[in-house]
Length: 458
Image 1 (cartoon, rainbow, N blue to C red):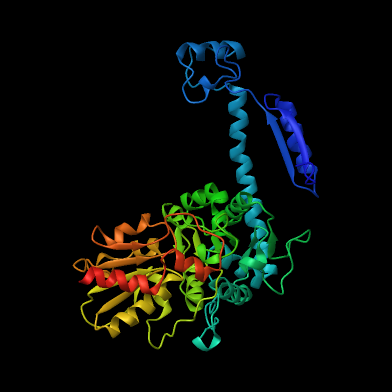
Image 2 (image 1 turned 135 degrees about the vertical axis):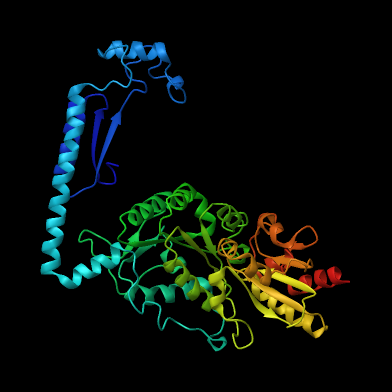
């Protein structure tokens, strides 16, 4: 921490004067963050348990408590004893709190009178309200735009949103150009603290913790980007964000073996399944550029927990929405993107880049007079939040012929395909090769989907 330029104090944690002095010195330091390192003794004062693991996970016990009280000069027989001196000091906190509250309220009144417009903005931030019209005229993509990676589309949408949602602040763990998380036209966060771009460095866990702290202020909507494979480094922070139901947005790019030549060390296969296992975590894996836009809308509107955008490195065609269903369907997690209009003989379920494989297979099956349906499963979590009626309309329980296609481990898909269904997934590590070559070698192809569909139907 000293090497990073922090102000560092080391103290004996049982030396109350030393602790007070360290806090006082930290408060005096105006130009650097402070770290106080307090070396303490577990079970301090306990003659037989001090500095032992036995004090960590179990009570000291009746006799040892008496010995500990004797060591510090407290009455041995009184339970839940608090010395009067300590009690008086603690109770001073009540009056101190009232004083601070009054000062705060008086300051807010003065601020409201002097800066009425800024006061309204302050309320908007603190109440978690998004400004009127924040989601209007966001980028719309067409097939004529050619193929676009969802990470690139995400970056375009993010930069438009940043102009409207002023408390949207974030950065990347040293991967901003790859994650497309940099806000153009805004300064970096620095000494003047007016910037909106944070450079977290190669510190995913620290980034996750910092995002949680930012969200806990109740004033900003933080986001952080890295490769999906590195989400493991920040998993404890993601878990806490979910546990605390904090409004944090993660931009996870390079979402599958489709990232290509970087190889298996950087190709996530088990990571999306791991994130899906976290309660109250919302994952969204859009299939094209327009779904990336819709995913950002969901992420900003969902304020009861974190949202992870799972985005592709490789370019994907923009789906022709004149033929297929609206991308707004991902707000419900899964939706019917293509359907023959008749009772389906088979349902193809896919997420992200693999939706394109499913759609191509669907078109070929129609040519063979097979009634098929394609379900775009962009988010397990959002889909599970829907009514049973809606879920059954998307995946009718009586249609057992189901194939799931995803460039990740097959584990989470059994819930949706059942024992009679088929999963085309990736249950081994990836390889270093162009993404189209990897998809072909791993069986993520239109031809295989058609073959498995015909086998299942006949």
